[in-house]
Image (cartoon, rainbow, N blue to C red; front, side, top):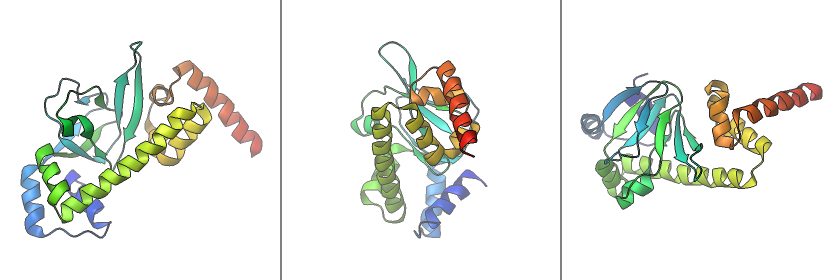
Length: 200
């Protein structure tokens, strides 16, 4: 399914309606995009901050720790609105990057257009507001998981909330989210799977 069609399907699945005229106008403003695995979508040096609707694939939001170690603080999958909204809204610099974990397709939405619809719009505006609320609630769960600092809890959170990530992302990528080394990730998975097999 083409990215715009996937987005329209997501909108309509929520019971929201957008007129043919408004959807046509929206299609003229946005861009359908495709990225390859490992490609950087948004860099720290970006001056613009468009919104990206993920139609297919997985992206990760990455930051550098004080020690120079890269860690992942969240994933974006199909149906997610991939954004760095705080820096975009405040017109401040970016302290993170968004990179492709897999090949990815999506819809790039200019930030100014998104902001206007978010504040004043009806059909698309309601959709964007729902998306942002979901992102905020999800971020709360991520913070809780990160605060617990338990590998099993973090992994099971991914398995429940990001099944595609667990199925398709490299183990080293999952390790960056959990906050452990790839070697520790391997040891954890061996023990985790053995425990699951013993229960069965």
